[in-house]
Image (tube, rainbow, N blue to C red; front, side, top):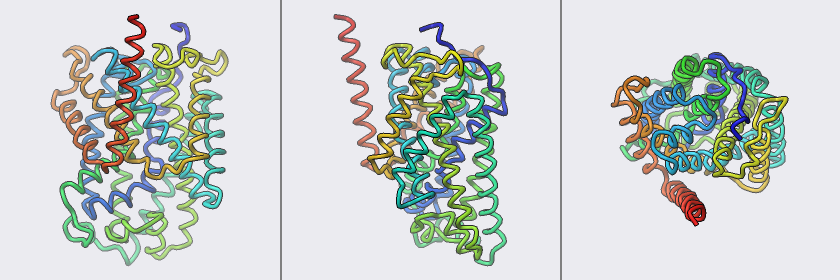
Length: 417
């Protein structure tokens, strides 16, 4: 399988847009309401905390990706720096958690585009995005650019509508001034839920084998994508809370559509709905891209069926891995309601980044190691936020990790025999 390598076709701009396509997805349209229910106006504090943890994770991941420019992301870093089990555990957490995220994004497309036929639209979205990825990573990058531009335009319209309305009130932004209330536990839970919306920069690292000059490109692309996303999310969160208040935001079914209605511009609501569907498509495109690359890396090491390690001779993509991921996601999108999957996915992704930060601590001084405080803060932040998630999500995530660990142990025992 060593000859099945991917082509390096992506530059800094392409990598930044891939990361933006993953982060500027359905999270910003959907995650604000559950975060407001958890923390009231303290969701702004939660957003800041999630951003700090995301920065630490991004820095650790970028430094590791520059040293290990292979498909697989933290699966590779954990394997090389901590040992085979930790790499496997990171890959398992990523594949399981992000497969659930793919289905959730597909269902978000259906819910916004055609609520009465959400499952059918979700399956169609999965088929379409899998086909785009199959055609090659460069085509995926160009489609992602178009999606990012559309989503940024819609979000800018929401922020402008809120800022220029007479209903915005800065007093609603005070974390302790809203009736919804704020507590430390609520802020931590909100941070864990909002982290779901930041986690897309992993797509850049998992594309390490397809990036030109990875030692230069990845460390530049990751913070750029994260910085743009943070500015956008902060502007949108400030607009939503100032117009609706934390209580109103917590009750909103379609938060940003409610913002433009409350701001006196109801004709923008359909545009926001279209923007949400497009954003979810962008997230789905980038998620399938990232998950399939991790499946490729794990298949190469025979932690998953080796047949999935094939690379298409014409398109230069892991086509079997992409088709397998697309098939699983399509089945889930057709049969399961995954609106509660944000917490489950966050648990898996936080586990994934905990391993990345631990691996970054093993970088030598001459290997671009970040200041030690960065991976330490990232590791502790991931563990705290994972434990602060809603109990059902944390328990389900822990159970899935235990199943993966048991499968690894069984495979090792079989190999020894």
